[in-house]
Image (cartoon, rainbow, N blue to C red; front, top):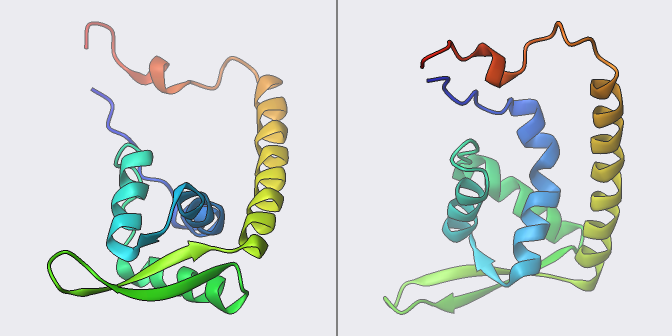
Length: 128
């Protein structure tokens, strides 16, 4: 069986803002829940750490794209919840436009490539 190749750090970093904003567009959330959602959405291929997530959240907060508040969880522990702002919604729309342009460009260029480049399915040995 062909193992899933991890997603490069550069691509993870480039996609962090639209991913976080998209998750927060689903509803308010806190750090650990965001980490779990990223892992879930990526089928386990993206496993972010606290050290990767919190700088993104703090930057988004500085830019006014998210707001944070403290709340007590059911366990009594305090959690910092993040909420997307109107500015964050506008930024998410812009990020989406840009990523759609990148995806369309990649689809166009990959559509012109020779069939001699193996696809992941072609790399799996017969009978595997």
